[in-house]
Length: 150
Image 1: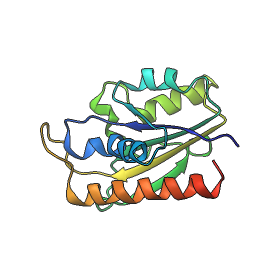
Image 2: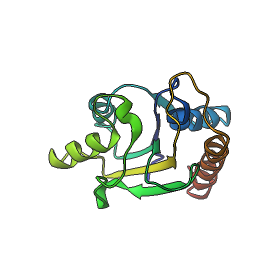
Image 3: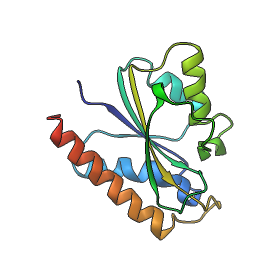
């Protein structure tokens, strides 16, 4: 399968919500194309419409310890049990996925890597545990792409 388009999603000014953006930056430092996405979920829905294979990295709130890493295949799982704080936008990642499902316009393969977040305070830096998870997720993606021969 063709290499996924990688989208780091979040808000750079709201603490742990920057997690997806920071993963995208680390990947670019390693020579891997990754895009930062800071707009609302409706725009996100538009951004992946021409792609069959999409990987989105975002901060999530499940009640787990900050820095916990989750992986989901969005086409196989309803995400209403997870809060994607992209909803610091008016319409976030979970809503974009569910709308895409309803409209039958999800990419053939849409994966989400979530990093458990806790602090979304305006002007705060990401917490240490989230920053450590960012490094781990970036490394996990690099290894996956190498393994898949992408």
